[in-house]
Length: 290
Ligand SMILES: Nc1ncnc2c1ncn2[C@@H]1O[C@H](COP(=O)(O)OP(=O)(O)OP(=O)(O)O)[C@@H](O)[C@H]1O
Ligand SMILES: [Mg+2]
Image 1 (cartoon, rainbow, N blue to C red):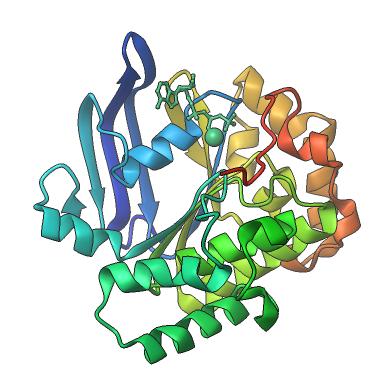
Image 2: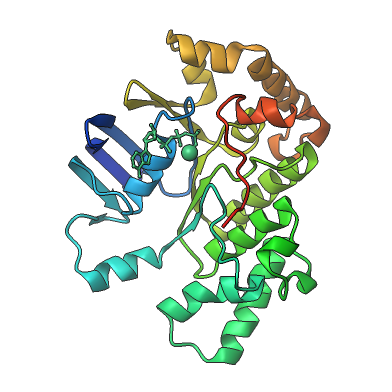
């Protein structure tokens, strides 16, 4: 990986996060290189979403240091924080679209917040992002409730891309999608990454996504992360990692990736069922229910 050659675009050092007495991360270190796709996996409740929210400054760490794009996120003025936030896009686990706004209006929100562009230009940019996310043009005037789950994910992605971000944070982007929709979404992320030179941080339960588009994977275990390529992680003795990658689903995803040669063109029918991919029993529907 380019990590040693290039300055990491995200550098987390000694991160501890807690909610009251509950410690979520303890002394966690993580570096993500510019241009890489980093998967983040771990059991339900292991702290994947909290890690993402800490990196983007929505959760204040109890201790530790988080640098994004060379800036220490704890030492920013409001203006600097606003400027930094414009350099990344986020697709939250629940989609987090404004339910009373159309897709186009949702995508325009960050453009209005972070730019003084005239209305016409914003409209053009919104149309471009809608196309980029693979939505039909007529999705623009629909409300989130009028979209399918897959289209809502794409609308969230279009909004995350609104400001031409350098980093894309995705929390469970393929959860709730059927296998074909999930594979298409992976292809889209892979293509966007290549054409826009994005760094992608992707929380996922989806083993197929890991094989398809991730350069490295961070596994949340015991309040820290183990980081490596899938091959490197498979050599870790940790029981959770072994079960995750070498269990039946892990092997199926591995075989599917090997069969396809080119990871992103892998046949969608190779993916597991919905409940398999999402890690059963975590009780989350990932409905875009707002
Ligand atoms: N705002 C909050 N207040 C209190 N506790 C929280 C808050 N957010 C998360 N937690 C707790 O932190 C832990 C980690 O949550 P997190 O959402 O990061 O899990 P996760 O790994 O993303 O799980 P999943 O795979 O189910 O999405 C959980 O025990 C959760 O209950
Ligand atoms: Mg989560």
